[in-house]
Figure (cartoon, rainbow, N blue to C red):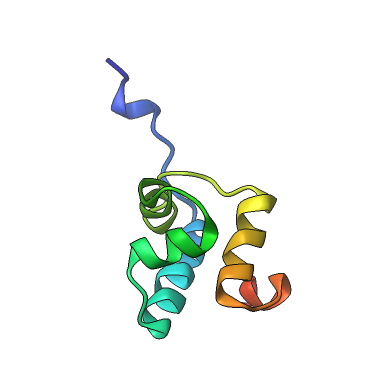
Length: 78
């Protein structure tokens, strides 16, 4: 069984970005299922992104930006 002491605490910027994803989603009036569908990912992965339990790749960042129909720089402007 994994030791919980080995779990890395999310950084402040990771928390802020997770909040940004969730805020943009709610602003659009979308459920997690809707955003996951638009990103072509599993809902379980989106939940992990929104709670800082999984890191994001550049490919995933691009999928998020595309789903919201915004540029990557705009997505990262928080």
